[in-house]
Amino acid sequence: MKSMSLLNNQKLILSSLAVLVVSSANACSICIAHAIGAGLQALGAQTLHKGGIVMGISYSSFNKSQAGELPGTTEKHTQNQYSLDLMAGINDQVMLTATIPYVTKSLTVTGDSPINTRGLGDIDLGATYQFKAGVKDKVLFGTLIDVKLPTGRNALSDGSGRMDEHTQLGTGSTDLSLGVLATTEDHQKNLWFAGLRGRWNGRNGTGYHYGNAAFYNIGVSKDLNSASSLVLELNGRLAAHDRTDTGDLDPDSGGHFGYLSVSYRREMGPQTGLIASYQIPVIHRLNGTQSESGLLTFGIYTKF
Image (tube, rainbow, N blue to C red; front, side):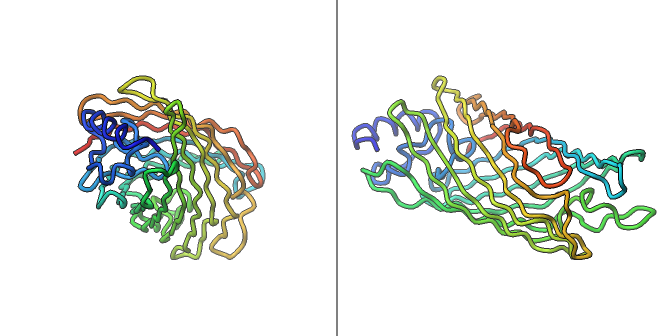
């Protein structure tokens, strides 16, 4: 960690960039919070200062395919999501988050016309707690808890009955995530961060259960100049098989999948910034017949 005199100097720089501003008494909680850090989207154990609010609009898109129910067929899934993202600092150690998504989905089975759905998805509510750090501590640690609510419709039907599970706007279940976070800064002022999170999924009204999953990430953020930064990150997901409404395991679900993520963050003004990222698949150990594409995300955020 920096000395108190350096922390005070950094505090003036951070305040001029409209990022986390606190008194020197608790400056250790921001000593490794860069200008393009929690002000746009938290990295690791970072949190906002008390009363700080960030609101953003983001877009993400990805494709996935897997074996169809009938032999020789393939199901192709396409999803686009538009989200309203909120972050609020309750105090200098607790930050609340919320994501309200609007999703569009398309399912195409070999030989059939696409099935399209759109509407409100599952809302996610979360909280991050940053453990109080001492002046000499070199690493910030934190924990997080997230609850995904079944706000997206999960009983959509057409002329042939209830539509495929993957075309439903929500999973129909309440899911709980718990995780641990860490953030530190090296001698070149690069910001390193890591996290480990588990997600326990509930069952929906039909008895379908998406496999429980574990997520991991490790990354580094490097300032390009006073207004922009580049973030490199490895993200991974290990998921159990899904269990269908009949109680059987879906052989074409779950497995280990990982991305190399490249993100560009930039301040567009005193209160506004953007994040653009692309996740490139680098680990392919999915069960059965499955494939996933890269994930594109773009967001614009405003600080209050």
